[in-house]
Length: 338
Image (tube, rainbow, N blue to C red; front, side, top):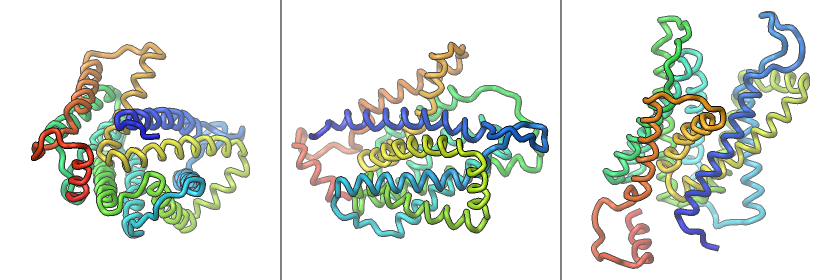
């Protein structure tokens, strides 16, 4: 059954939104909650979950098994993508996540949100420089408008926590590194799509395979793996939260790789960036929080840019030689250009 392109895009986007909405709720419960009733040295009751590498390792392992199961049930053509590309893509992906988490030690959360909202920009720039991708000026304008709208909507004035002056530049540097890694990840994915066109499931399988190996080695070197196991044995309810996170993460990542394989990393980065916007908007509608004028203006910008991109963003930069050519001819032209 062939699903129309617009319908597939909507299904993938909704899948990403829903999966990561639930993922965020459970993740906050895991990382901000406390386990047990032991009194800690700081006077708080219960232990905190602080094993970031272990958390990502569990997710990557479950994602790998999930993709392996899907490809076993429904085999696909052989993936001819070179393993070096997958290893490099996995490394940049992991570095982006680690850099963002580390940056939160030195910058307030709104600063991190503003920085990561610019993710489509390095994806687009490095996609052009490394991935040999081209975009219309309309798409450039739409992506910039979406980023501006998300920033205006999500950034809230708040008191900045007391941070040492000597560390104020380190957080911004880590955010810049994270954005650069996001851009490299998107560029490598574009090269893979152009060279061998792996499916979403194949990309999910191979990238999580390499990510699991890298994280496993890091856990052994740092000793976090042993500490994580001891913590999980003391608090068995951690496994319930990890299972829910792994399930939501696997489904969400499946939709992400389907989006990348079908529509490219730029479209995926736009969807994942606006996901934050829709999550906050749902919170506003459900709990009756009041929006200030700046946030309403940001919402209008995002919706207007999304509508414009849907209508005009996919038009080619140059007119075709034969107006009204059939779809098959256009597909052959795309293959020749790639």
